[in-house]
Length: 344
Image (cartoon, rainbow, N blue to C red; front, top):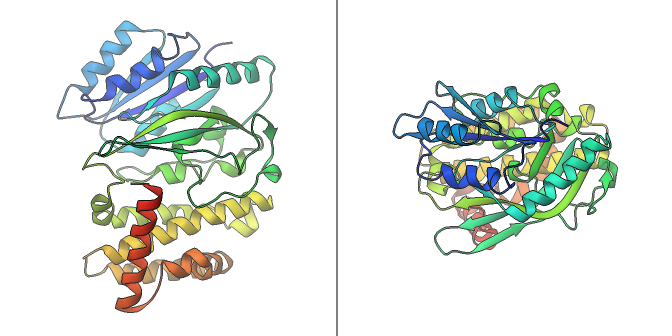
């Protein structure tokens, strides 16, 4: 049947932890010959990332492929992995994360069945687990109330996603041709592009399947990690850039016919706008408030209905209180949500 799945592993100065990631896929699959791992060295300069990747290729030449490129950022490394993918399906695993062996076997069995019986499923959703380094605690994100389990479905069959359940990159396994045909183009030298990856292809996915296994282990705790709050504040311009890309990807009310998918995408975009609002208010940059106001005006002029939903719904209201007191309330709400949901 050829390669069932390609795992893209973007690496940048990842020598300290990439072995665990690659081993979890290659050895976790019992060295399955229908698995491909594309390790993309994104111009690493500080360590022997490329040499480590090549060692994995030498050990498993039929499974591990290595691509070296000039530094282009996480998004360009993902795009390169998609270009080199031979698998019917594609999944990104960041080099500081890993996958669970038992869950991986369950995923492979399911994908093999889809391909063997020529059953076209465009998107397979699995659970992911936050692995918090500082206290050793875990938090699993599952989709039990939002998606029927073990059933091929269309978007009209999905349920309600709560605030912690949006389908991030870690949950998604796309059919490779969907990624190649949906116009996905992750910008270079940009953080947080995983939000684009988890948003733009969705209208091109006509069928999906929820496999209720805890596959992806999402490491949280490095000080330089992009989801670290201090890093997010320093890179608020990156948050705005990615969310702007998402805004202009679709006129949701015109371009997305399926109502439940549209509702889900509106919720995701609303959440991104709210994160931009909160992070901008935490920023000490002198132009952060003006940039935020301009950003909301841009959405208003581009798509008024989307603006109205995002700005005047519950989430938009609670993350955009005006004045000094309002900003403190907004920031306090965000910190409370962070402690509750432990998302960074």
